[in-house]
Image 1 (tube, rainbow, N blue to C red):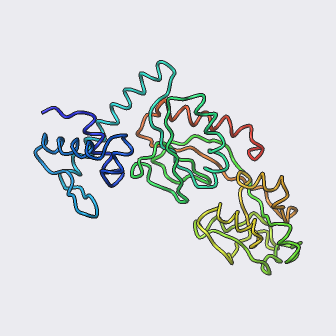
Image 2: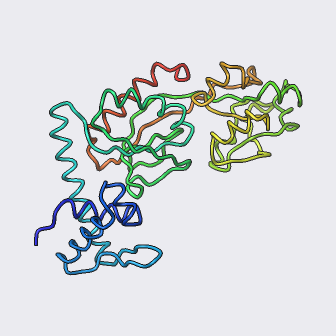
Image 3: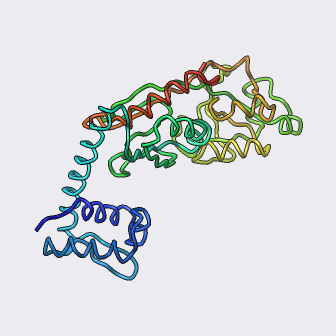
Length: 300
């Protein structure tokens, strides 16, 4: 019995994608070919790894145990390949990156073409999650996190920082008035986050000199959704410069209460697991991102 790497990769991809059809598409195989490969693996092991129903695939207990070993073998082979590639100064392989939608759209996406031109052998998978994810569970190599880090199981690399400001459209201010004092915000429609609650504390000095905590009239989990709501003149918002710089430059959004605004900057970090040696492809991406962010106006 000789299990092949192709069989292990097919099995792991079927589990990750949830179906043989999706796995075959990702692996550039036919559905029948992927199914035969999986069947051949189960025959060699003389056990059932996946229960097949008309609606889904479900791991057996044997399948769960074997999956962990399969992933370790696949990771070991990928790591060996990366080490050889690194010696040739050519990072390669699949790199899974996670970031909140605003940072993905406004910072990472514009840099992808330049990164791929420099590192053509690295394949990128870009995923967006608004909350903090488990990197191992989501099979993520590196995540970009905005704000103070809490997870001590992660390595981190500072990428930069971005200031937050209170903003509104000229149309909203013309229709509802331009607040001159912080306490006047109580008479306005305020746009805020569903979570974390800390994002609803705005960097404004009120009469008691404490940061101003808002109660949103409209709340969302996504900063990009709040940006679009603000651009539609739905209310006043507090967002980071990295997603609003071009809006402010074009006059679509204007800062309000500037004299009452404290300079608060959100740290931007790249994170990956502490017990994982940083691979050539992760290092290439983080280095490229950090260098690019240094030259952006929002980071200054």
